[in-house]
Amino acid sequence: MKNVAPARWVGLLTAAAVLSLAACAPGAENADADPTAPDAAIRTDAAELGDVTLTVWDQEVRGGQNEQIEALNAAFQDAYPNITIDRVSQSFDDLATTLRLALTDNEAPDVVQANNGRNTMGAFVAADQLLALNDYADAYGWRDRFPASVLQYSTYSADGSVFGEGNIYGLPQVGEVVGVFYSKAKLAALGLEVPETWTEFDAALEAAKAAGEIPMQLGNIEAWPAGHVFGPLQAATVDPADITKLGLGNAGTSWATPENEEAAATLQGWVDAGYVNDGPNGTDYDAAWQALAAGDGVFLIGGSWLAADLEDAMGDDVGFFAPAAQAGGEIATTGGTGLPFAVTTASENPDAAAAYIDFLTTDAAMETIAETGNLPVNRTAELAPADGVQSDVYGVFDDVSVNGSLLPYLDYATPTFGDTLGQSLQDLIAGQVTPAEFTAALEADYGEFTGSAG
Image 1 (spheres, helix red, strand yellow):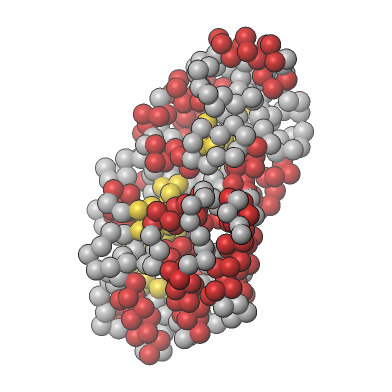
Image 2 (image 1 turned 90 degrees about the horizontal axis):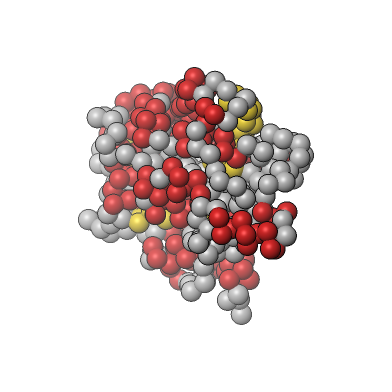
C-alpha cells in the first residue's frame, strides 16, 4: 500500500506516449487494452523485487477459508522473504461496505477481493481503480490454468460496460455452488430419500412440517441470503440461458414472465405454509446455519462455503445436494467462483501483487484449498475427497459444471441490482408484494440498465 499513485501508469501520460508505450508493451495488440495498464515490461521473479510490503484485503474469515489463506500467505512469505503480507481480513458484508471508500483513499490496499458483479468489480473497473492483468495472464499462463468459463466472471471491457468479455481483472481461488444442506438423520427419520427434483423437495418440506420439524432454515436480515434460495429455485421454471442473461445484465430477456412469477410464488408459498423458520427477515445468516448445525431444522439452502463449518459442527450427519427441474434432467443452480483477488491501480508494486495472486491460484495452492475443506476452482474432480459433505459438494460442482448449467449470481446484473433484489425478496417474504409486483420491480431495474424498459 502506498500513498501516491504511481506515475508509471499510462493513464497519466500523453496520448502520444500512450501509443508509443503500447506498441512496446506485452499484449499491446489487445483491443481491450486498459488505460491503466503498466507502461513498462512486467517482472515475474518475485525474489528480485526488493523489499515490499503488500497490503491485502480479503474476506476469508470462516474457518476453512481463513485456514487456507493463512497457510498460503505463510508459504508465500517463506518462498519470498523480501515480500511481507499485511493482511486485513473482514467479513463479506464489512468488505462490501468499506472497500469502495478504501479504493479512493491515499492508503488504498495493493490487493483486494472484489465481488464480480457490476456494482463492485464493474464499478471499480469503470473508475480505473483495478489494474487490467492481461500481461500477467500471458506471462504466468493464467488462460491455460483457468477455463474461459471461469475467467469470464472476472472479465470486463476497459470501461466496465461489458461483463464477461475484455480484460482480466482478477483470479479466484475457489469454486462455489449453491445447493441444499440437510441433516441425514432427520431426513431418515422422516422416511425420505434425498430429493432429486424441486417437486420432491417441496414434498419433503411438507413432510417435515407435518412431523413438527422446522423444514428449512433461512437467515435473511442481510437481504442477500434469500437470493441464494431464489436463484436455484428460479432454475426450476426458467430457462438457464435466460437466467444467465438476467444475471449478467445483458439484454434479450425479461423478468416479467410467468416462469419468474411462478418461482417467486413458490418461495412466498413456502413462507406462508410455515416451511421456513419464524422471522427469516429478522434472522442473521450465520444464525440460520448454526441453527441447522444445532439440530433445529432439516434443510438449509446455501453456498458451498458453509460446508467446512457445517461438517465441523455436524460431522457425518450433514449432506448436500442440488435438485433438478425434472427427474433425470440436468442440474442448473447458482454458483461460479469465489471473490477474485485483484490488483488496485494505486499499488506501487503491481509485479509483487500479481506474483502473490499467481501463488494463491497455482495447482499446489489448489491442494491446500482442498485440504482445508474448501472447493478448489481448478482440479476439482482430481482433488475430491472420498466421503463426507465435501464429497457431495465436489460432486455437485463437477456435475453442474460439466453436465448442467452453473448460473451467475443474480446481483451481478446491474450496479443497483443487489439492493433491488435484496429489498424485493424481503418484501416478497414478508408478504408485502405479490409475485407479479416482485418481478415488476426487478424488471424495472434490469430494463433501465439494458435499455429495454418500456
